[in-house]
Image 1 (tube, rainbow, N blue to C red):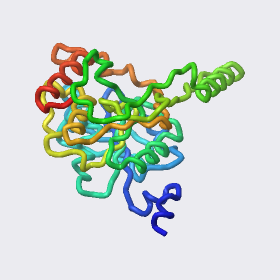
Image 2 (cartoon, helix red, strand yellow):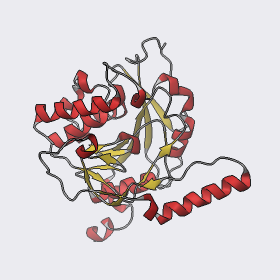
Image 3 (cartoon, rainbow, N blue to C red):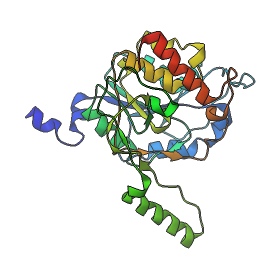
Length: 294
């Protein structure tokens, strides 16, 4: 009977009584730009139990900022924290607060607009693979021009080609058609980044990352200076260090830009004399040398 019930849509999570939390952080220049992203999370077909935004009392990147908090829609909880973990603030404080509990955390960026099916498909994939990290998009070491030395997780995810994604192309046509007849711009539709599910090397927070808080041991919170600006490499390396794979699902639509992505973006910033790509490259080499991974 139990086996039958766990196969019913949504019952497995209900039976487990698992709490689902969406976890984000943000920065002062984006305080007034959060509405579109947060409302897309509130309006998911399958809703989270809670949505948290973690705000440090002081920001390392914005030392001139006088402490205040953004206005957020009803149903979003602001969590004030003492320590600024950089971009990893979207994940680490929530993980620390819920370690040892029956909770699933989906962390993501504050500049994304999620399709209404996004959380539902994230959780479906999570239910199928609860021991893995689940992502809608990731990177491989080859994307950074590096060769992976220890290939522990197979099969590998296969990227989808837009020209063969007929569902997306149809929705894109619908968007363009509506823009023409209404003379108003509309949000570009989201699409799935993979034709076949499989493992990747780096979990990209920009697309959402589903984790158990117990995936974070004490080392995860000790971010080395070289990786403070690069949360994706640091967190992904720590998952792999503990033998946890990163699974990219082919049914999860990658969230599109909410319009805030160019505002004080880390991708366009120089920190410690390095751009984001150089920081990621050096960070991967650091993780390889320090933990004998990848």
